Image 1 (cartoon, rainbow, N blue to C red):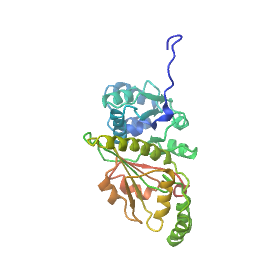
Image 2 (cartoon, rainbow, N blue to C red):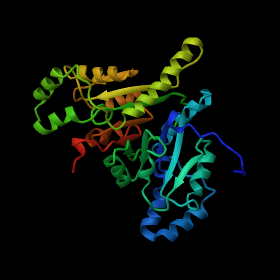
Image 3 (cartoon, helix red, strand yellow):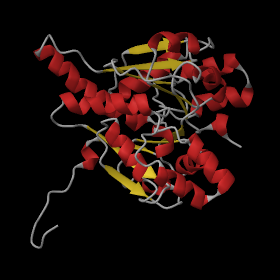
Image 4 (tube, rainbow, N blue to C red):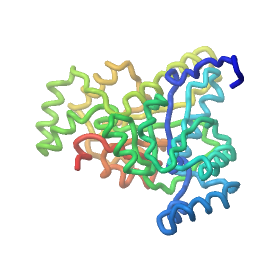
Length: 315
C-alpha cells in the first residue's frame, strides 16, 4: 500500500466463510504418497514440476464450486472461501493455479509451512473448516471450531447443476450430543424417547455446525425475497436434515430449529432407516454426520464429511 493510502476493512464477519485445506478441495493423493514415501524435497520438486498442471477435483470441490456461484447472482457477495494450507507459498502455487484454472472465486489464503491451520479458523470468522487431514480436524473440534474431514468418494461434479444442496444430520452436528448421550450410555431406545418427549419444549444447545446452517438460512431468506419480487428467479440453495430421530423425538428437533428461526427445505425423520436411501434421491453436494456408521454407506453415494463431535466420537 502506498504511503498515506487508506483502505476499508474487508467485512469478513458479515459473510458465510468456509475455510478449506487444499487436500479437501483437490485430489492430492499422488503428491501425498510422494511426501510419505520420498520425503519433503521430493514432494516440493514434484509440485514445482507440475505447477502448471491443474489438480483433479477433490471431495469438497462440488460443494465449493456451487457455494461460490451464489456470488455470481448476489451483488453483496455473501460467500467467502479461504484456503488454509500446510504448504509454503512456493509449493502451494500449484493449488492457486488450479483454483484459477477452474474459475473458482478464491483469492484469500494462508500458507503455514507444515503447521496445522486450525488455529486460524476463527481469525477468518469461518463457519466451517474442511480438510482431509483427520488430525487437523480433531484438534479444531477439540478447541471448539466447526470442522470435519472429507471422506473418500467416487462422486464427480456436474458443472451443469446450478442448485446447491446441503444435507445435515441433527444430533452432534446442528445440536449438541445431550440427547444422543442418553441413548449411547443406556442403549435403551424407550428411555431416549421418553426423555425427548418430556423435554420437547426445551431447545437443545448448539452443535458444531449450527452457525453454518444459520448463515445458509440467512442467504436463503434473501433468495426467497428475490423470488417473490421476480417470478423468473430460481433459488440456488436447498437444505435438508436427515436424522435417525422419529416420533416422539421429532418435536424437540422442531422446537430447536424454531427457537433459532431456521427453516429447512426438506426434513426426514428416519427412525433408524438407512440414510443412503434419502441421500440417493436428494443428492446433496455435501452431507454432514457425526457417526461413521452412517457415513460408511453415504460416502459411496454423495460427498460426505465426518463431524468428530460428541459421545459417538469419544476415544
